[in-house]
Length: 144
Image (cartoon, rainbow, N blue to C red; front, side, top):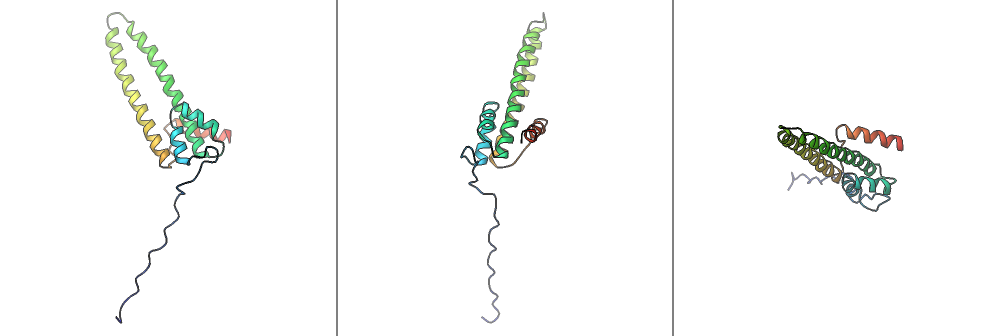
């Protein structure tokens, strides 16, 4: 046993993000509150009103309000276009079908973006939806 080297001890774990960090106004963990705030329009409005201190949750709430508003406006515009295309004589059914396919692809894109934003919020990552995120950030800077 003369040449035995002492076994080095593992370094203490580095402090990571606090798993139970609470959002001060709602009592929920920040990541859970932000993920719920991602529910388009309604979740965003509720958490923007309820959460007064946690900027992470408020950012996702504002982004959700803008995203939900864009999704709602797309639905209204899509119905109008669908009605107009459907009333065109002779080629109306074809145009209406074509627009229906385009609208379906756009709705799938909205759904995918919503799912990604919710996952990012739940994992504690601040993710800006393209075009919408910078608008939300500006609103947050103006309000705070």
